[in-house]
Length: 360
Image (cartoon, rainbow, N blue to C red; front, side, top):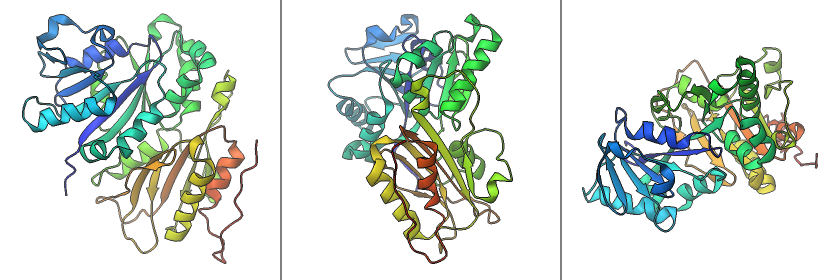
């Protein structure tokens, strides 16, 4: 069955990084369908009034056909109201975009989308986009752990204001972002121009996702794994010798590639143990997994202890049965992350492997 839920994009980023500029770009471009943008306050959004077609107390209609809506009450009620008006044919839009405040942690919002009964039935997370200011970004990462969390959870990182610094400084900052989140796509933007086409269809949690889509969403566009490392089946996240802060070091990531299908009991034990012991520190878990006895793979995604329903992929090459999983965690050492993934390689006697966390 086709998924009729409305795709929802979460836009977050550093204070002053350029989210408002990006929003104006989105609201003038309807080439990917009409977008309903949800902001905290119209006054803060700084919308280009020349592009407005009509305005009411709650909704502004742009000339492109896109909408801008100010939050009234809590976010759940605002989204539910918009979806209700769409269903009643009062307004039209094809996708939703939520702009968070500058220091908002994306985790609680993504969890709300999954646990709220109405939102879970009517919306689906299409991706998390973080705007990072290259000029002030290093200081922001040093001072605000929330900014580091925004980078760590992103599917797409848009680097702004690179024109205000040297090429070497821009590359150093981008390398730091890649160290925090190796799996995110990273692009540069000058005043939001040309970025709207990159914002959509980031999440591979769809039945018709292709292998390149899923692998890129899971493991990113980092250099290929060392083939000698892959003998053990474990691929540690790339570590670069870069200036970082204690905030950066609180974020860790690890990935694993398994050539053979996994027993369902082994996968369930791994996931249950991981969530039970350190669920609050798991920012994201995502991947594609082959289960013994099932011909096609599942793609799955979770934030802390809340998971999307796994999706069976319809289009996958029969010659590829590799499972690929990545964990992004907070306050977890590399050895702790590796120990969680080691559980997925069940020992020959099929007994559960020893699994425990030791404080780093």
